[in-house]
Length: 224
Image (tube, rainbow, N blue to C red):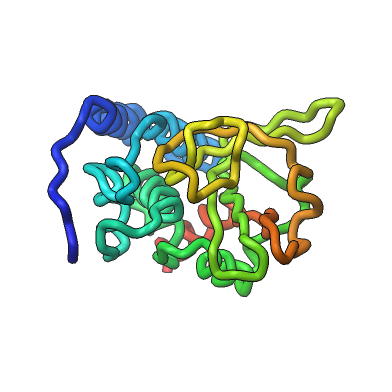
């Protein structure tokens, strides 16, 4: 497994301290859906500002995200970040990995959970921590962001996602080849047209993986 051995910078050390604080804050509390959601959102906060070195898809934390999935440094890491966050939150309560299908591919993850009835394409159903999946046309390439905030305004539904391996421009959500940072991005739910409606060529929201269903599935697997 390829690891490049980066030394942590200030943002990296701050993220590590943040994770320790989150674990200490929640580990004595009983878990339920709302508590686990809140822990996930705090985990998103901890990683804002973490970035790769140059355009290498590699850094102190990025290598950790990829390594957790058994992947080499240097690969796209937006999905690896989400799975790392979900796994960390589950570990606070010794729960099974919330996203049991461990793959660095956004479309592979979406199709896995689609077959299990755990995805949806109606933005009105969106809840905090749901995993929004973008797709580039009919290709296997895409992007993911964890739902961080939802606002209902007269202009429509406004969503903020916590995204990795993306640009630092908060006005360009869903752009996975324009930078290598973890940031929060705000966007209109209808920005790319109807969810689940392919645009070829073109980017669109394929759908979202339900965080609630991921949590309930983990509870079921722990009890088995």
